[in-house]
Image (cartoon, rainbow, N blue to C red; front, side, top):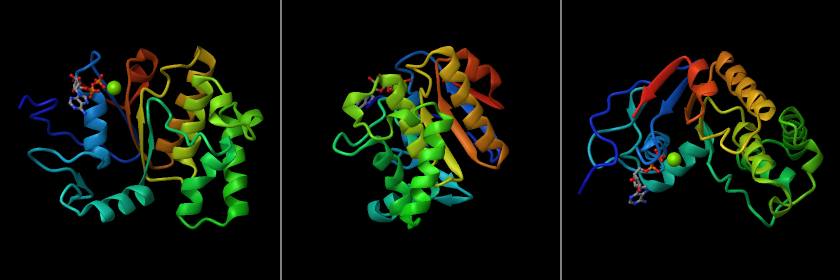
Length: 197
Ligand SMILES: Nc1ncnc2c1ncn2[C@@H]1O[C@H](COP(=O)(O)OP(=O)(O)O)[C@@H](O)[C@H]1O
Ligand SMILES: [Mg+2]
């Protein structure tokens, strides 16, 4: 079977932004899913702080993922039945944050990313670019030490893309490991490290 990505030996340091670049179909999303623990590698291992995470059973892997990382999917993957605010609060509540605190934090993030006025809407009532920013809020609401983003500015105008960059850069400055797959030169050029597939 052909490998989508192979022969990679990469480090994603703390307190930095790594951009994974490369033409469409080169395996950027696949690499993110592997490192985030959503796919298992056919060979080799994914280590977090020196521990192999790909060998953990599925349940423990899901639990570890939810508590350690935030993931922004390219197509947002919001729950269509819940409001924007409830979508953003959900990982915080799952992590045990008190509801009032989760709502305050979620609202502040939505305001920062310019989508606070959509808090009471459902995902079907907002644009693709707004959904992408809501998904970013959802990934950040628990202040995870590791943040993965798949084409986070794919649907955004320059102004919104600049805000997304500021939020990710600020998370990295606060110590987070940020890994993003992107076609966007503005993001790739500003990242601390670049991996070209
Ligand atoms: N679930 C899958 N099963 C089989 N092939 C896949 C799957 N997902 C992606 N691929 C293939 O793997 C390659 C890399 O895909 P992907 O990681 O999505 O690339 P990128 O994000 O760089 O566009 C592509 O050739 C794609 O068609
Ligand atoms: Mg992709």
